[in-house]
Length: 442
Image (cartoon, rainbow, N blue to C red):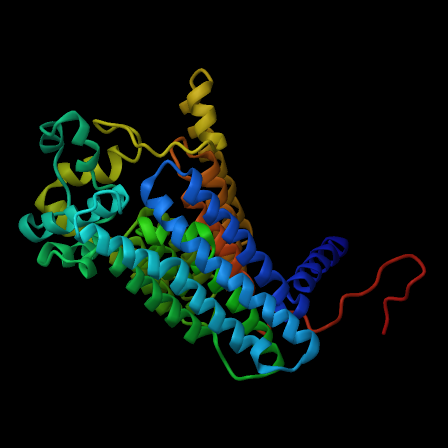
């Protein structure tokens, strides 16, 4: 156990060494340079027109960020203490990069779409806006199975709303007024920005050395949730996953600052939007139990999704079941187009009884996580975040129908974990040197 602990601490030390190289600018440079390459390739090769449009704009934004960080590195060599190379400057570059690679292409595509372009939004944008319109007119965002069956075969897929009822709220502005700023992506961005701002505010403390180190980790976590291409592309072209992710990060930030009630409310809001937040809610409830606050977490984590489901259940139970249960489980009138080549999809599509095998593997992974939670419940927000990140990564890999874009959840969660460390969570003793012939004492 001692050797395992030392190995884990050494790995963290090596990651911190890489992350802190040149004051964090070295990894910033790598992030923006690789992202610029990804965006350029997307602009040229993607078969999805909204993605190509994003790539053409985002590639320039990432390139400008790359050049800016290169200039910062050169300046740092001459003036190591320059304010233009410090942490506040890196935050500024991150904000400008997010504006250039996400908000600008989002606004551009929304304006083009309002002007009549039909190739400037992914299907989920239309689905959410239709859900908002149905919610306003009929009191439920869902079409019943008979209504979906009555649609032409090519339109039945768009008749489904595979989200929780709260997602329709982002479609209400479009139902009230048809203009570019009522595009649901604009409101996804507003919700994402607000949740991330609250998370950053919750985690920032006094300016001690430890807090500055956490602030640097916090910046890296924010970068993962904003300028990382899988997040930037998703928000600019579709966007429904980003407010869910941001609310989960906010919930974990509240957990790290010992505010279990608020953590439950934040993850409950996420769960009222999409099922992806429910595993995070479960882990946070278990975390709350270790602090005798499980009921406080559960009140929001379970109460808000139930409150969102209840009106839809009362208005049309069959429509709710068809959209929220049958379609995601592959038993709808049409099948989901989510077919990224992850192991679960490959097993389901190539092996005899492959769908059953993939489902069994997914259940086995869920049981393994449940055993982990029961035997070693997470006592810190960091541990809870790591369980959520690795658990969702396993689920995405094993789901029979999934999308590459869903990786934004585990990637952002795992990058968020270091920002949740508190001074009491991190051992103050130095890493001992256990090499032969070396003393472990100071």
